View 1 (cartoon, one colour):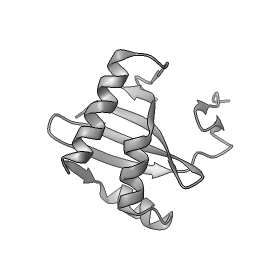
View 2 (cartoon, helix red, strand yellow; view 1 turned 90 degrees about the vertical axis):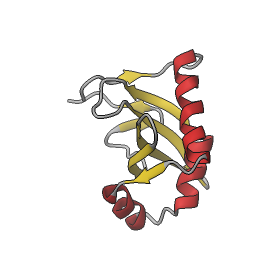
View 3 (cartoon, one colour; view 1 turned 180 degrees about the vertical axis):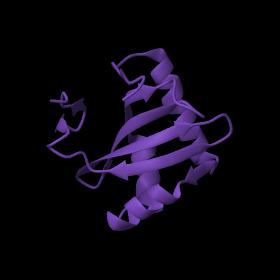
View 4 (cartoon, one colour; view 1 turned 120 degrees about the vertical axis):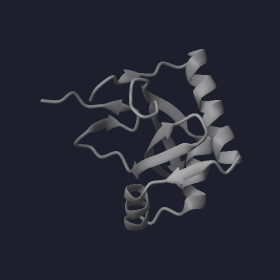
Length: 117
């Protein structure tokens, strides 16, 4: 993955990004991609649940060099289940790219990615 930056708690720029993400959700400035909608439907994730996971979630990876907008991987919870939400953070809107449950093959736990073999 190109330009992946693992996030460490307490970083001011991450907090600003999270504040910006929540602000865009609150302003209803969100575009959910077709891919994300299909995945949400298949995983029985409602838009309300998705927005709650984003509002209460934390950024665990940042992709500042992504084009056309910087993006981030957020960890949020829907009920008792951990979900990852990949977001493009554009100037005037937030783009939901996908949402999925982290699996044991790729993740040690919900916050820690396994090393590729």
